[in-house]
Amino acid sequence: MLETSFPAGFNLAVVDRSEILVRAWGGFSYALAPKIETARDTIYDLASLTKVVSTTTLALWLVENRQWKLSDPVAKWLPGFPRDDLTVFQLLTHTSGQIPHVPFFHLGQHPRSIRRAVYDESTRGDTPGTVLYSDLNFMLLGWAIAACSGQNLDQLFRSVIADPLGMIDTRYRPRKRDLHRIAATERNGDQRLDKELVWGEVHDGNAWSLNGVAGHAGLFAPADDLVRFVQALLNLRRHPVLRSATISAMTRVQAGHQPDVRGLGWRLEPETWGAWPEGTYWHTGFTGTSLLISPSANMGVILLMNAIHPSRQLERQEHVREMIHRAIAKWIA
Image (cartoon, rainbow, N blue to C red; front, side, top):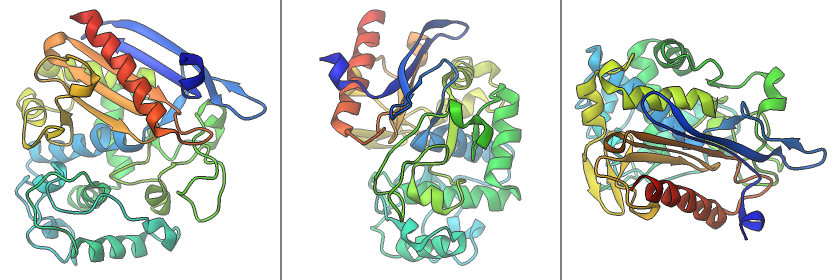
């Protein structure tokens, strides 16, 4: 049953603060002929893990450096943004009232047109307050971070996060010479103007329309780079980017209730993934990626799958995620 239901390929790492406890990989990074086997250093499209690995970390770094406040109106940093009642905090906690997704990529690769369309869509959002997960929140955050810092999002990610953590192969817009290392994603999907196999560039259509750099998606990474990212969060008092108090605020309840409890950027209380201790935080990505960090258990789980390759089967993807995390939770109980 596992053989017929498992995604094309995977990379798994289970870590504590100082060691890698489990490291496994298998399947195919490219499952069409001629097939390419998954390797330890296969690079994955992180999809919405971009929201926590890059955007959330940068947003909180700006707070620590007193460049902005979570209470700041979004319009303070985005001139022309038509809402003066939305704040950085609401974007981070998905409490802005924005709808989950709009296929802006139908406008083509025209970043200015995409931004205008996102601004226009924001005027049709609900009243802020209730948790409603939305890519639009983090698209706006990405632009606001760039405006506040005066740097492009990809450049800021490299200098603030990737270089200090030694994430040498994590980047937006992966290099063409690394194509053989990159896990392919979807063929004939709904994220492009023309049907095609997406391989070596971001799967998400709206991130593609923004030339591969966005607050909600666009980051690519191998599992071993994310091991460094997760272990740094488990060693919160020695984190090279964020202070321990900031990480504590990031990972405690800020909004929502089951089944969608939110910290800052991160989800909390993964009930469907097994009996994880209180304080566990997590996030997923549409392509089949996920991170789970449990400080009280001194454990992190990095699971990267090209689960929508060559075509998406979302129920299969979630079944495998639940199965793996439940098994690990039972192992540490």
